[in-house]
Image (tube, rainbow, N blue to C red; front, side):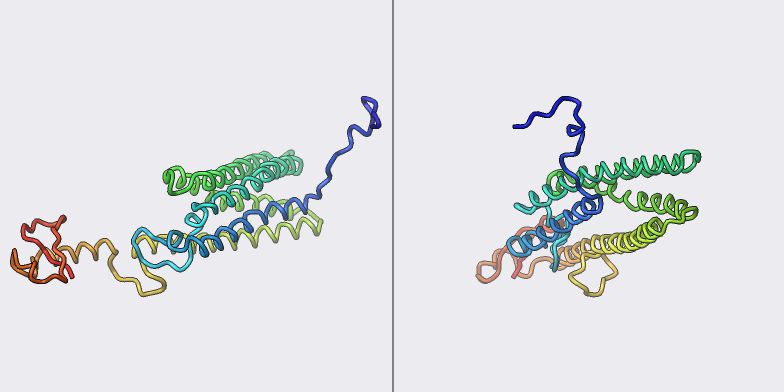
Length: 265
């Protein structure tokens, strides 16, 4: 083995050199590949569990939370996000250093740079909470992680504002190209974020099956109306005669004040 003298120039050489572009592509692809793998496995092996909804209406595809909360899908997703998150912290710090260099004498932009850095950290922490705390384990923590992750829209908005100032006084074609890409991604993400929020609220309010027309009442209200009708009609047969009809099942009402048994087919 060749010994290198202490203080030699060779000791300061990097062991591994990875281009930033390649690192960015790998970092971005990890969650996408992990999510695709989780959805495919959920559809193949856990279709009923992955498409189950709280209001018991059929669902065609699993939600992201459902797809990443099953086994072994959860481990694939956690592995992907674990590798994905570490470079994102480094990139957030690198961008903060870049902004400070570009806006060294402008206080407002310095403060906006610090806010952008904090939002980037909040987005990454929210993603980790969403990943490692599933909705089936601790829903409140999972929900808090989702709220933090939604800060990504504000992070992208602040980023676009900073880069609009950079592009305004820059003659670099590369920086102009970067600004346009960030702006398009922000609009794309914002549009689908609003679309997801609309369908989430609509699903919880109406519990629709597929693309059927939404009724003007919720599923819970419809269930209450059916229960009221059963209580008002009372039993189908007088008490003690249910044994004469073996294909009927005698049950006792639990949500109304009827004292006689009701019969269900």
